[in-house]
Amino acid sequence: MNKTLSITVTKSQRSKLSETDFDTLAFGHIISDHMFVAEYVDGEWGNMRVEPYGPLEINPANATLHYGQSVFEGLKAYRNEAGEILVFRGDANQRRLNESAFRMCIPEVPEEVFMEGMRKLLEVDREWVPKNPGYSLYIRPFVFADDDYLGIRPSRKYKFIILASPVGKYYAKPVAVKVETQFSRAVEGGTGAAKAAGNYAGSLFPAQKAQDEGYDQLLWTDGKTHQYIEESGTMNVMFVLDGVLVTAPTTTGTILKGITRDSVLTLARDMGVSVEERFLSVAELEEALISGRLEEAFGTGTAATVAFIRLINIHGKDYLLPEKPADAFSNRVLKSLDDIKYGKVPDTYGWIRKY
Ligand code: COI
Image (spheres, rainbow, N blue to C red):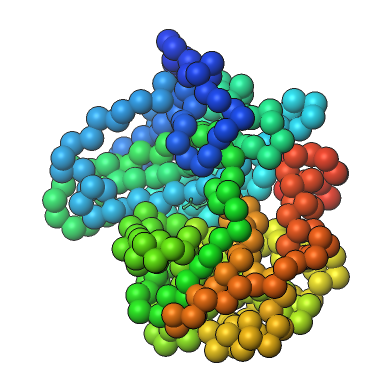
């Protein structure tokens, strides 16, 4: 690791800013003008640079293409009314990236490489942080194996890249989800808690099947018995049952330790809401839908923020969720989170770093 972090900057010849419509941003289609790149060679991260976003040269024998040794993160930068850039919980994302990396035999990305790389990228692409309320700049750090080698072993070379993408909502409206009891996303001892590329690849086929049937996402159940709800494809999932906020614990190694999940639980406790981190069975969920005990269900994630669930399919039966009052917990917690992220209220949690 270089002691003095030197990051070179090469500016793009042509900015895409003027051709980007910041009023109609969806999720993930547009990437800003630049990216941060660092390379891991001979046991050290170096050759750090911000350069124009563009294609990488990858050899066909690149280990990631074959074996998927790759992990990623997602965090967001917001603009406050004074025009300052606020990044939400980047330190937590940096730690989680390295937890994922550890599980996938990827070398740690030092905190200063992550933080300085992101700072430099935000400095160069500052104008890409949307000014419109409700929008943000999604930051996508990722690390991947860069060896050209067809044998199986951890790679010796890696690239760490940070992209930035101005985004609107991931889900434009409340979602319909289907409880998945055939396929598994994760099993104990597997890689479910890591934000590993392969976890998402494996989920595509069952998710596509559900989408073909008209659902937006799956609710994954545990890989062993398929009796307990774990998480959704792009987010953790939470339920309000008899006024109690219930979500699966992250102790089994099968569920992503969501940073939005943690933020929502923290805010809930501070709002005086009872929180239970426990596995909710599919049977209890179905009973609660029938009896009316289930008041709210929603997903939490960086991309999705708080995504309201309007319908749950269980064993082929569609259950509509009840209408929510305006002061429902999910509405209140979404507002509290947004107020902190956009700097409308003081951040008493130490979650925001200004750029
Ligand atoms: C995020 O919320 O940052 C995610 O990783 C979800 C993503 C797969 C769209």
